[in-house]
Length: 274
Length: 365
Image (cartoon, rainbow over all chains, first blue to last red; front, side, top):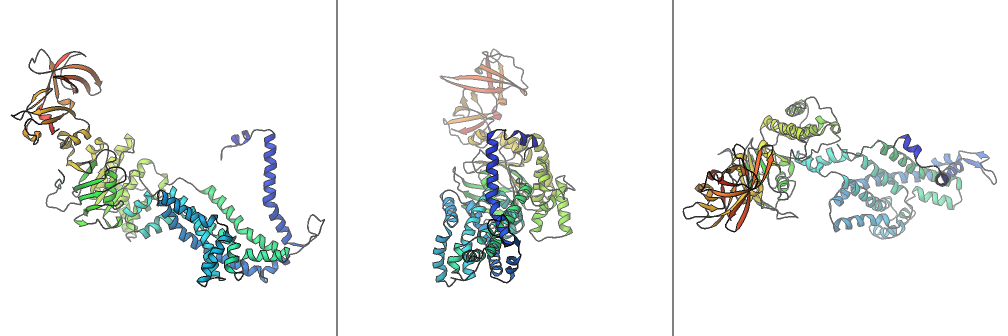
């Protein structure tokens, strides 16, 4: 951040400032508006046209969380996302390091291979994966869904760590080894502590990739694995708007918390190595 | 001189390189490097850029692959061992400290990865830091150090590991003059702490003179000469070494039947050991320093080789005369440094030049 003098000098006053102001209001309204509506909807008891706000409020939808399908779906999604985040990170860390060490066309091929499952529509990915997972008897199981979630997660996180290791000073590894560290000790005492920040971010990203999956869970899980997005979708289709609003709000919590944490961490991060 | 003898006869050298070969992408690579470094000895590797000095050092440390040859540390063949099991520590040109560890933890790192704990570690860390005059800085964060301190912490960490061999890649080249003296003293102190063999790479011949017991000149993939700095500068073994040192001038001549050499400076009676095995009538190249030429007034020495003063360069350490020599149709320019000689002449004057045969090296052309 620059000083307050720079902040008052730019942007210069004029009609451009008004346009920018309006755009900002539109951005905030479109991103926060639906969330606010969801929040109100989830606690409304009676809300009929033309009332601007509910005429009655009720916590019934939230209380139902413990008894109805949303609660178990929340647990399923949470467990899937935590495992996908942790396992995805563990696999992507060495993969990203290996990619960063490749040169020339090998590096391009590796990066494309990692990017493909990220870029491919989840429905297409799921259709392909389903054939494989069914053939090994994992169709319709939580394990199968987890493996399916890991495919885009590992791809995305490998690219993430490719970036990390491209900027990482490779001499650090040589230094640790020549000072007597075995490869395992180098990971344990040097790489992992130095990469604590990126690893935490990667676990969070892996969590979010799994958390938001709809198509992959639906196709591979065959409806038998009831994760939160599937449950919310069924509630919307069944017209249970208040329960759907509760579920949708729950879906939004991790990304919002994650974003806030990332912003907070970014402010505290010093990029320069010692 | 491919395999110079170890300094300490009879003892097993701390480091022995046998016919190392390593190809690299740009350039011919290392074709045949053999070298012995005694315990407590400091040997510097010099050579032109791109000859493979750093590659050699990294290969010795196990950080770069070798195509052939053997690396022996204290008599044990470590060629097939990983870096951590070689008894060798490699220091990067700019220090690489672990940013998540304090100074003390950095220095303790090589001890901790070897499973040592407790007071013994603390004591060894204290000693290592004291050896580089950084006592009491254990708790300081690695990123809060000055440039010179970082170099010294990296050195302390290396000597805490007590390797038989320390490898230093251009230890002084990235430093300003004040820090060079500082880090140079730290290197000497570090070695005095427990006497490892040191193999260091440098492109600066001044550093080498100050730091090294012996200098190995790496040329064309192998060690062209490995001797003390004094001997290296006085008697470069080959024309290529003399050219690399950059302090020798060259004149072409030929060997007369009695062994004397005839060139534009007249007949030079070079001692047999400096003449090498150049056969009679063969063309040779004479290498000599600017300080080896004596000038006198033309009328005083009617028999000497004549030259015309083409230019005078005043330098802090005395003047240098650029002389034009005529040898039949051919013309050549040489420089004469005249510190300690009382000569008065101006550009265009004719002078008589004589070459001290004791300072001349003769190489086959």
